Amino acid sequence: MSEKEVVSCDHKTIESSGMRKLVVNCKRCEREHSISDCLPGLLLSLEDKYDIDSIIVSDFMEKQYIGPGVDILSQMRDMAGAIESLSSRRQNRDECMSCELRPAQLYPNLKRKFIEDPGSIYSELRSIAEKTDHKQGCPGCKKSLMEEIEILGKKAISLKSDILAEGFDIVG
Image (tube, rainbow, N blue to C red; front, side):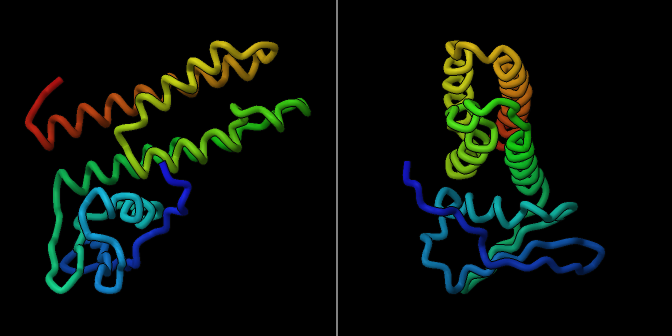
């Protein structure tokens, strides 16, 4: 996975006919304009936008997305926000500053990986849980990390269920 910086798409929010719309300007973008190529930038564009009813991708032709697709993207935004919010947990010991499981380092990296490849969240959480389980000498931090991983895991499973139900009409 590349370490390139992920940046928000060029966008604006407009209100029209009682609806809030996120308009993403793709005309000058150098990306390929596929959902997999644009998803990280789109999620960052939604980062501080709530109650969005539709997303308009504006290139030489405009395409509007409404309904379940917007809801799923909003849930993905919320998942990324939940991951980021965990990075503010404080550490009380000096040795915490060099730990690979330090929240201020761990969670921003996990958020970046999630927005670049949302499907990777399951293996990333498993990897963090394994590292946490093998960590010695940090019982308080270990307990907090395992609780946080469990919370994120439940959110990830809920998101997966919603994607399967909305996108593929699979209930599970």
